[in-house]
Length: 113
Image 1 (cartoon, rainbow, N blue to C red):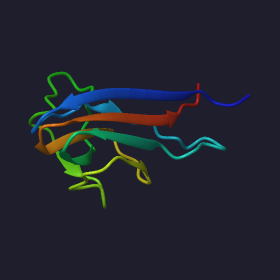
Image 2: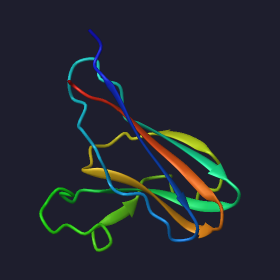
Image 3: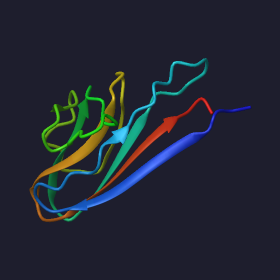
Image 4: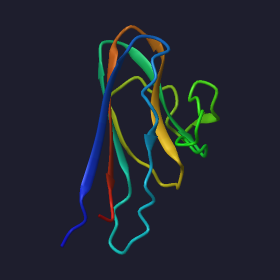
């Protein structure tokens, strides 16, 4: 039986907008596919896909003051694009760094149950 696929989606609008942190579940089980993200731009925006090693479920964690960094080759993007997360991190998010349009960000991962 195939493992479930989980999709988390957020739409954000405007300069400085950030999606909530999306928890990453390490896909280390046999046959697991790498986590994928899809970003759909409407209008004009520049955005980053950012990752953290922070424990986002820790009591009192604040993503505004967390340790986020742009994922390799996923900074300053201006067009709709897919990507694969080829690293183990604690969470991922999208961040609009310029523009007035909107961004639909989907993070898709296979889960063991």
